[in-house]
Image: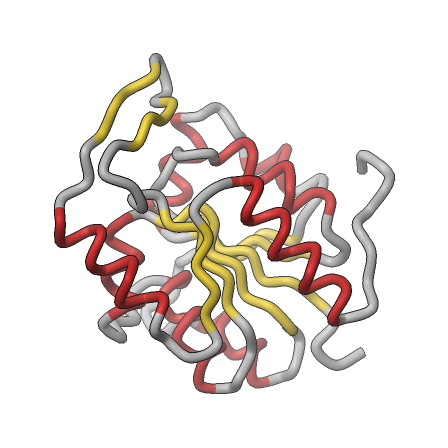
Amino acid sequence: MPRSRFAWCITGSGHYLDESLALARRLPQVDLFLSAAGEEVLEIYKLPLAELRQHFRVLRDKTRSGVPVGMLYDDVYHTVVVAPATSNTVAKCAFGISDSLPTNMFAQAGKLGIPGIVFACDTEPVVVTKSPHDWVTLRPRRIELDNVERLRQIDYCHVVASPAELEAVLDARLKELHLAWNTSSS
C-alpha cells in the first residue's frame, strides 16, 4: 500500500530515548532510521540493534547519498518522526542542512509534503535528563532555544517537547490516517 509506514529517525540523543522507542513500538508499521550518532547512543543506553530488529526494520546511515531516503520517493512513508532529536539535528533541520540519514529524511519528507514530527530535546531554559549513569541538569543556550522556534516555522513540521506531547501528536496523526495504536507488546 502506498504511504503505509512510519519512518522513525534516531539521532544521538538519549533524552527520553526509552520513552520514544516505547511509543514507536506501539505504532503500526514502523521502520527505524539511525544516524551514526544514533547507533552509538543506542549502544551506550544498552539498546542493542538485535533487540530493535525484533520490532522494527532498521536502516543505518551507511551510504554517503542517503540511499534509504529514496523510499520516500517510492511512497513508502506517510510520516517521518525524529525522536529524540539532538540540538545539532534541530539546528540542521531548521537551517535546511541534510547531512545525516535523519536530517535527509526530514528535508526530503518536507519537500514531498509528508508530515514530520520532531521531538526536540532542548526546548526549555532548564532540561533535566537521564544520562547513561545518572540524571543531569542542562541549560540550553539561547541559540538552541532559537533553533527550536525556527524549526517550528518549517512547513510540514510539528515540534514537540515531551513524551506526552509526542504521544498526543502521534495519536492525532493515527486518527488522520484512520489507524490505531498496536495493542500487543510485539
